[in-house]
Image: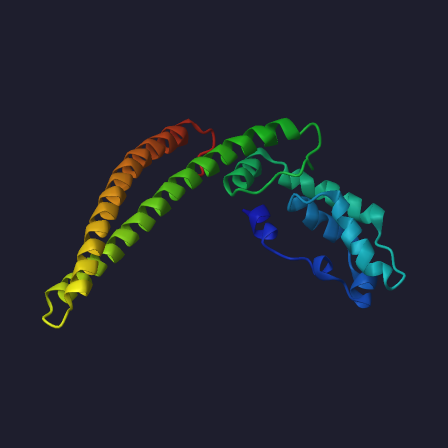
Length: 204
């Protein structure tokens, strides 16, 4: 999507503008780019602050004209869905005649984003517990080798046996958590698949 690509760009003015940039910038184009990216028209205040150091003021009328044109692209319903699905925030830039359709699509995409994020979060929890379980298993192998070694003192052997018992309890706890998370994952995945079948936009 054009808008999502522009969202990833950084305008020179956002990081401070040189005197030459302040003099030569096409403010209508800057406004258009900000509008297409869904940025507030108040963004021009950042350019104004940068250029004030050189006694130069941005062309506000040109910027606003470009911004107004840019939001016409940004506020299309199809883009609203993509913006929501990507997890971007909407800053209320759409005109009244376009906002209802945009917001409806945005909310639909946002719901999909949240369902996908919830599934990924459960996957991350499962992966973390499985990694911990593997680390504990490796620790048991090392401890067991030390326990049976002839040079291990009785005190050290007793200490390690207690540690192995504690590891067993932790592994049991982790195993139960993984089972519960897998049940939750199945539920999350079913919710996501159901929602995907319901959404209006086919770009899934």
